[in-house]
Image (cartoon, rainbow, N blue to C red; front, side, top):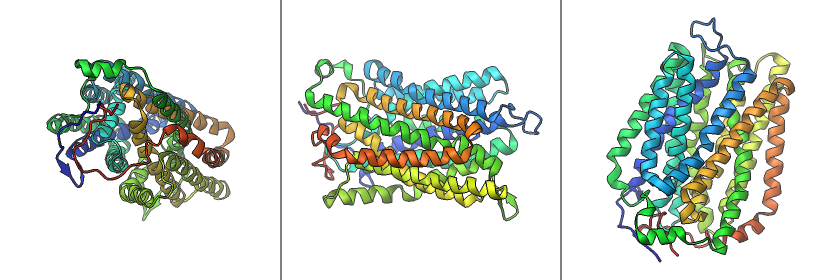
Length: 458
């Protein structure tokens, strides 16, 4: 059975709905990354400072950071289940946005009960929003449409536009005027995201709807998985191992690298000290600059018949990101020799991390919408984000270990492990891709009527 939805209005060669989701996610990430940029700095800030923090040790702060970032994404599993079984993706995104608004608003209150309560609301809100808005992006494209990967990269630029702006604005407000002002400002961003999402519903009428309402959809949902579907799920689960390792390394940005920037990096530029939180915006800035170029590069490789499968891109992404940590090795070596390290080490590290991220993260999101069975669409996206969460927890653990092992060993160890693992998986890539059953073989640019992801061909 194949169900085709009505022709969708397009903008810049993509459905208008993509840009509604783009701006919704942009404001959600503005709120999340704004808070992320100052969370660890707030925790380790001295209680005697004019802008007083909580005075925690680096180890305790990184431990909380690890648990928090893990739970934010692990909650994507129940968020996906709720969408698939009860609300649909569209309504779940709205509920998630409202929970996030509550969470960031509560964080603005200068009380410990408000701090922990706000974190709980944010964890639940991200869990409802993240897997479902990403799945809706996939629903905008017909099966086999080569534009899907490009669409996810555009969507991913929205994520990082929000991260870039928030790291500068929320980071500056938090460090200069007060941590809780920064937390509250992040909430204003989420409010704007909710308003934009509600106003753009007319462009999303064919995606994200609850599937359990009609008899035909119920039959689709009750049908057992085929052998092909099971094979594809297996490939997804194996690819998630790359995801855990990637984010376990990458998330050092908000934890160990963030503290390293504040404590051991010479941040003086023309007589002015650059706020440590501003370095969180470098990654997002590079994504905005290079996102479409890298997506275009992979699309051209695909059209020329060169290797450009999702697994290949993800493996290359892991290797490139791992290489970036060798620059942090250089930074720590310079610090040990001179008592300080230059800012350019961080910039180069973030450049490689960004290129690696663009090869892996948006591609992984697209890969899931290609391979995941209809009945488990949001759940599989939730599992992906849960793997991201486990990677974030791993990042926190590595940050804690740096107190005993030192940054040099941690950064160098991460680099070596990521590169070696990437090459090992590259060796078995072709054998793994057999189990995708050619899902990416016939991709091409399709501009006719678009098929919603929740209504797949059977």
